[in-house]
Image (cartoon, rainbow, N blue to C red; front, side, top):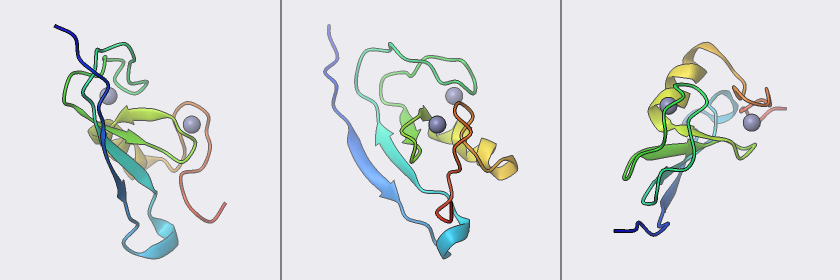
Length: 84
Ligand SMILES: [Zn+2]
Ligand SMILES: [Zn+2]
């Protein structure tokens, strides 16, 4: 059984302007070949992945928790906010 790479994409729109990060959420439907840099677990079939503006991907739950404490990408330190 092989999973095809199908993604359902929607953009999380900032609710109060510049102070919220933009995260694109995707439902993963594919073989697990990539890992989340925050929890170091592989993306599983039908998990939700959040993509930041710098195009780095993490589990949506992981990146949302991360962004409650930090304001940049865990991998490249790019700001996830609009004003930079
Ligand atoms: Zn994760
Ligand atoms: Zn990044």
